[in-house]
Image 1 (cartoon, one colour):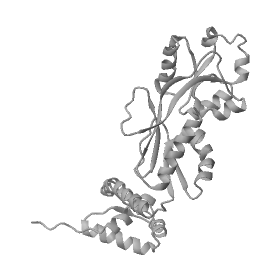
Image 2: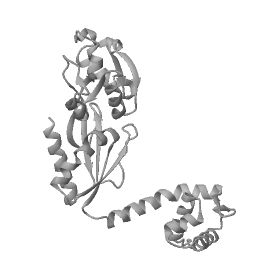
Image 3: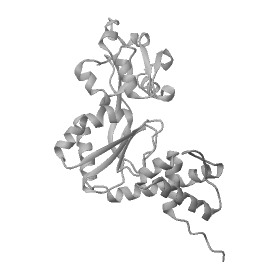
Image 4: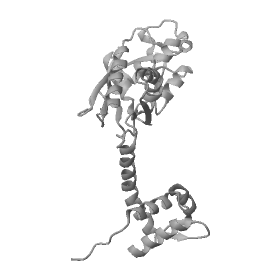
Length: 292
């Protein structure tokens, strides 16, 4: 049987860092060794595999085609190993929470002072991503995301209903003196969901033809759309749990004569059963119940 090559995993890690930084010196600083030691590891790896991973210039390196292909294949594995090792050494009182950007900015982060008062020893690291590109981060202890009414949510625990209602700036509402349902088509509607599925669902609930809406500006997050709404650019169909600050201050008011409509749910998934994670999830449940 042909003997398999025994390649040093440390050498592959050195290769990945050089490929990422594009510099022997920068890689040496990150690894805590000299650039000469880095170069020696690379040369040994190339000799063992019989390939050239880099083109070498004056104090610079660039990947060859073979090097680029190898880097694309090994970088995810190196990253996974490093994240797994970091998780083992991480303080058990630190938790990572992954949430959509708008939910993190408008509900989670402003509420964290209350969690800190309850569990002062626990440190929370918040990671965010857009709702459209949301994927579960492999090393996050808790992930929170939104599900539309018709989306399957197997394996996700219920956190809160997504209740939405049209909100508007008082200055824009003042221009409409009657405040009747018949005036709805006269108000510009802001968009923040692909295909305006939220407005369509809301219109169905009130038997309003969605085609009568006067669609205006479009935004890629609820947070950006809410800023536009406060600026008086139009009315927005906004989740009630994201608008507490503006409605409390009077920067936004609910459009009269319309009740909130449930358009989905917020749910979470945890990948750790540590005491800190259990405390955090219990706190989230309590916080959401206080908003009902």
